[in-house]
Image (cartoon, rainbow, N blue to C red; front, side, top):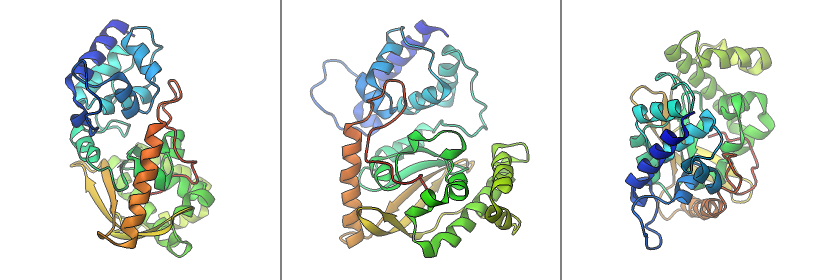
Length: 301
């Protein structure tokens, strides 16, 4: 790990960004250009102290998960991200691998979505980034690791939690959609990919999954209209828009409701709950966690 190179690289990138570049308000008067350290920490969902120590050349070696979060926060290109990994003492991720990096262009779109649930998912339905309303609706995905981050996995392995977000009468349809989506990802990623590993894992653990997988249904799509259930707000009918990256490895999912409708009012309430969760973010040094409303279910968009 080259602490000097890492610190210099982080400082330079932070200074080159403005709050508007990352979807933040201008805030109080600034004495120096660029983002504040606490703003980068907030965007990367880590403590300000942890991030500050990296810039001051005295922090521990960051994990690849931390580096992916920092690369997203500082809107790095793939070349810049690869350099970040290397100076931090890690190998650069494979360009085709499914991991936490999100292209800056897709992040810029998410940055501008503050008042409605939106998130970026991997091809295996792993939430990579959520805005405040999405965390308030689905729970905070940052607390999950490994396969538990995949909503396809959690749907079949943790059904009591994962399915609580949808009405019971819609469960069968959503289960089939998730299996169809995984088979589409398998077709793209191949037999030695994480998609194959996930399918094999679920086939051995869930009879329900095995039956659906054997049906050979293939579809990479998200429902245009759905009903989600929040424990305090209740049922919310939403329209769902999905923006896929060119290689279909990630998708930006946005939930909206007709203006001035009862459901739009419920989404406004979610936006307020999401704003409260952002205020408490970054409280755990180096944990990558975000303080917010109690997590009531495994994330399952």
